Length: 192
Image (tube, rainbow, N blue to C red; front, top):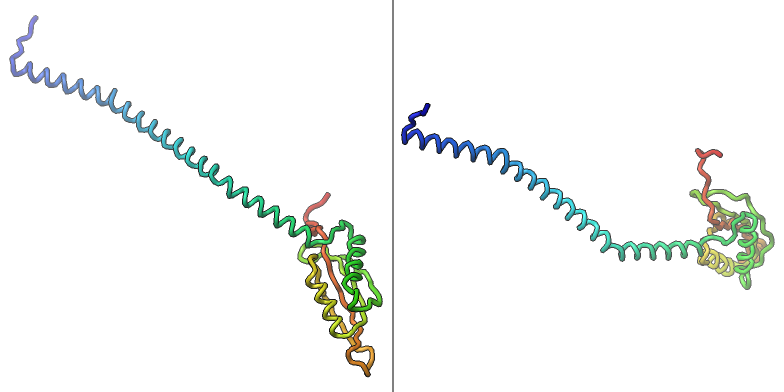
């Protein structure tokens, strides 16, 4: 059984066969290869982005080293601002010694009294009450020495009165001088 197919029909069959073959090649071979290439290109681009970010971080190492050095300098500066002693009693004795040194050639310290330590803005403060006798100029010198010292000291209270009505320059002054130690206020929510 042989089919008689005309020349025109043979051309249509060959054209149809070529079209079906091309269609199948496109959808079964070319399109999956193209989609696979797109996903591979996406993965390559992701890796390129990762490497670029990695090099950005590596190139910022000098920035972070400079920040670390600055933080160390700030920490060293803060170390000098606090009283060196760790215990409040020892810190109060150290503060009294500092005040004795400040009084040299300026004022006469009549009495000192250590107040109860308290937390100011979350940092342990050591207050010492000092009663001094001096004239106005020497009292100003004494206060300047306190306020300009490398340690962070505060003259919180200042009460002054004349001791002699004949000599208005002679003053008796009571100061509350506060120094700080490196101890933070404990959190109230934490329990042992």
